[in-house]
Length: 340
Ligand code: AMP
Ligand code: MG
Image (cartoon, rainbow, N blue to C red; front, side):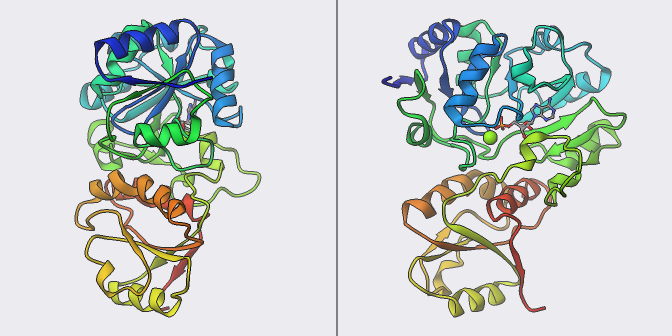
């Protein structure tokens, strides 16, 4: 199949809507990353999404809506906590998990009794959802295991020829996937950090737990609350190693290990003292810039043929928690603590 490249205008939204109503798949921009959208009410479409991405079918999909009022049809009930979160953060990069309504096919929820729902703020995502007139299941539009796509070109790189269309809305603003919170537990629980921080969620809800999988690798045999967290994720082909230490320790370690096909993944301004090629992915003093550029940088290390990448360790605070969580998974939790 030839993948159509659509523009983020009314004609592009209308064409995307037509494809989606006919059961096809469309890569669409959101403020987090590009999503691979399909009709969330049709289990056979969900199967096509899993097949195109090579995604394990036990990893559920997030359903995207373009109005708060659409939530009620997808879930058993809308609790006060969901209303509070929606008022504070929707439209935006927050996904809520609630007990699902019968209209959500098992393929979308991967057999779970719950469904994940998000109302994105990106005007093009809203344009596509409204034009389709359907809730859209949309996992990240990458091949499973690869870094999530933050441009239409990333989507084409991974999925060209496998999906009907991609709508190009330029680079994504946040750059990492949505924050995922479950409201289906007695105390709300953060399952995946993202652009909406744990601190911001606690400001609105009071008590919010953080799932163990946010900061640590899952231990064998432990029940998984967010299936996506058990897979090695976000990885480039290169071996990523995180170095935890000061500027000077980082530089000394990287330079001592300089060799062909070794690269540094570091912050703006770090490149000067390094004796290996360096990819700078943002400004240490603003975690949002790190989130914005991380996945593009992880793809770039492959494009440059790197075999080993030494990454600086972001501090796990604010949006930095999301960057830390993604980078840890890209590195398979391989961290070297310098100076110990
Ligand atoms: P992606 O769409 O690729 O960003 O991945 C969606 C993430 O949301 C994965 O980590 C899923 O495990 C998680 N997720 C989706 N639905 C549920 C659910 N019903 N319960 C728990 N986690 C979910
Ligand atoms: Mg994904």
